[in-house]
Length: 345
Image: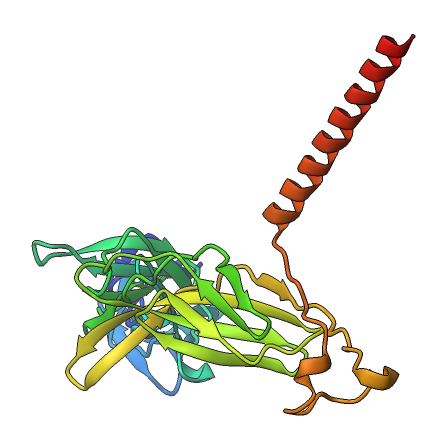
């Protein structure tokens, strides 16, 4: 009986070789001198008096129909029953390696083949290599996934990678070297800016100061959010800004973020951190002023200001002081009245 001997051929040769074995048939009185091996497409190979043989120079990932016949001085025996044996596929070529997410401490790598032709049915694993400081490549990932996140990296530094695909036929060739670079570390999130109302139509916005990041200067971006939308009202190195033309009965929200400036060969680039929480500044509703003759709904012209009553504005601290003083005067007055009543009685 003819059959394949799988362990006879090493994994490296399994894509081009097939080992077969058979039992010697009855010679009917004349010793067997050899065998004819038919393995398809009129490929007939004559071998000596053996009971096993390795077919070589075969096509990878191809099915062969193999049968055998014995030879003695009386002639040729009938062919045996055919067996179908398939050679193993070749080890796969390396896939394309890309970086899909650049970070300041990590790189997310992804790999695959540009078309379906490269996707081998028996592809099972990948080896991802990374170059260490000594210049040697070592495996940092082995498995079937097509993505891997490399972590604990240094900002703004180049890293070298290679990749290799493996299947049951063995390990494929290593790819060429891929170089990916981490980004600069962005500034952190700032606290909500502080708001100071200077007068009826002007306020001051102030935010915290960040130190230069590894020698790179820090700038800031201030945004205004109101009923009309979002506007960039300041970008620069300062940590405060005065905003004028406040409208009454409106809500103003301000938020700020920090950016890091650094130089490259083509100029200056910026990397920005996230925006801070918003700081809210509500403005009060404007109260109409009464003019002469009860015509308070008209606007005051340049010659009408003399007849208007001056508007007195007091701060919260002044109001509290007046309130406390009033309570003290009332208490003293009550004490005096009680004292007079006691004396008269």
